[in-house]
Image (cartoon, rainbow, N blue to C red; front, side):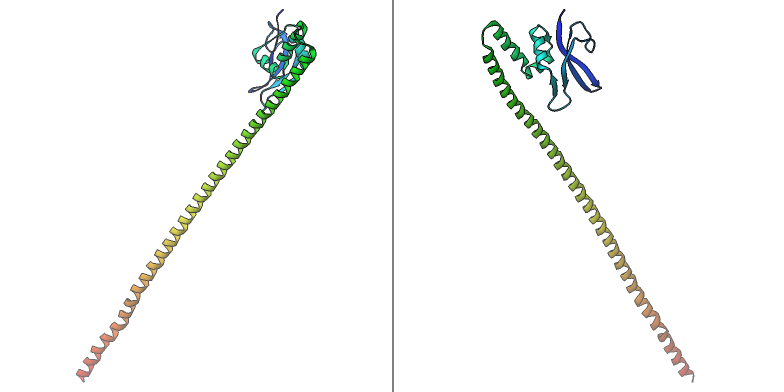
Length: 202
């Protein structure tokens, strides 16, 4: 019976969470399994991983074959290297102390690089968020500036209309004033010849 270490899909649509299981190669992907080793969640940054290292190493040493994705996951945890070193210990190529020392050095180096990568990812996220906020602020300022310009234009237009109306009213009042003066003077001029005519009759 071929035994594989593989992922079993769970979770909701477009938000899958995977169980890391040991199963018969002939079993369906999400079907019957022999043992559950842990869980892998790719929906978060960094990806969430819970794994029983001891049991995973046991299955690797007894001949279980990991799929490509689970091989990468096990490599990240250092289990593939541990298996390699343990095979060396079994064959007598190196001692257990040397194997443990090499594994600890590798884990320390891996942890350091992982922390740097996580810091870079979070830094990039913060920078992108800051840039988005800055762009939004600039856009808001532009909208407010345009709004102020439109308001200023409306006020200027209203003032110009009022000035034109005032000038028009002043012009009409000036035209009415001479007309009134001419109407007042006209009867006096007409009365004078009438008086002269009466003097001649006498």
